[in-house]
Image 1 (spheres, rainbow, N blue to C red):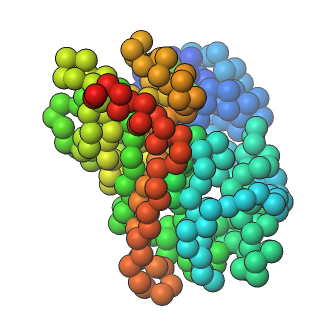
Image 2 (image 1 turned 180 degrees about the vertical axis):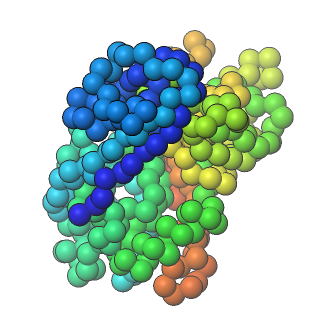
Length: 326
């Protein structure tokens, strides 16, 4: 059984207790409030009882977070696009709209459910147990509405080896994205710390580099094709290479330089000139695809690299955008 997670820290500025602890811990305010109600929060060595109590700058706190009670993922017969498979790991081309693993609001119909059925039916063994009963084999994730490649571990040895490569940022990840506007310069590096947004805890945001919260994130981008004239500046096809892999990294980094991804419901706002086009193309997700994935096989020690073509919806979107270049 997993142990409790102990979070300790110091409050940076005076505020309501729940807000101050959410800012300092990356937990949501609702989660902090619930933990206070369960008697799992101490301030200055004494139990906290009121989420609305004021807390002073410099106050110390301890939050005891119990392990999540995970629901057992069950096999489901859901079609998979398998790019590569051996006894140690499996690489799949995930469609947009599929969640990677079961969680609140998505108890089934996920990639994990599909993989459990696939492995059982095809004599491919099972998935690594390191991720727990809800996330077996999951080493990394891509968003529900992002399409493309990810690798899943079938053995614990593969899981540990892959996790080490992701931790040291040695995994090759190349994404294709369609953004609003024409980035200038046409190629560059976005290096900005990412963490939970103060305004909306469901969103990530660029944080001050000196912030005690968040994680270092680096995205290298290159403009591949412009849509519309320089004066119009309508849209662009970008290549994004990830040096790190943070939650919503490409989406937030592109939005931070004024070029949010088309169709992004959280970080983007569709330009007026493109609203009809996106509607005609029936495109209703962020225009982001994990096109390449490369890593050292954690057991066989071979260099592997895989590519996934753009899915039909993104190809159609790009074709529609091409009308502005005629």
